[in-house]
Length: 127
Image (cartoon, rainbow, N blue to C red; front, side, top):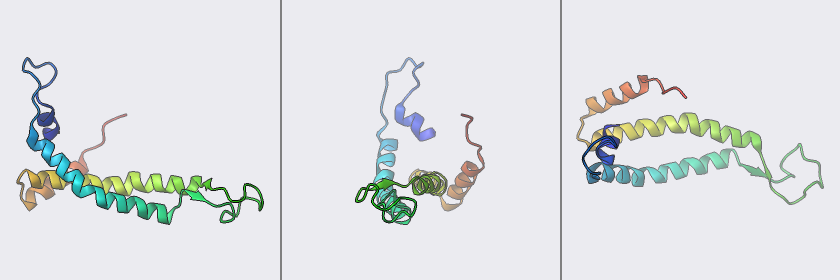
């Protein structure tokens, strides 16, 4: 939140003009560059384990000859990918993001661990 506020400059109610702080922007961009390849591999692994589309011959529920040769969306696999990505994937990404941002601000290992613990204990905002 602190970086986001500094990145966007003063609030809308402020009398000062908008100013972009390049330091937090650089941190976000740098983290995104580092984080994209592992996330791509995670999505590939999910697709390998739970393919979104199956051929009718691979799906026992589809009668032979019905839509032969066409791929079909597998709702169960799609749901599993969504569930795993929104739970396990989001948790790991959040911890890595908090740790990386703290580290890039110069925090030591103990401070990074304390920050991660604080974030883990903070309840999510109401919908």
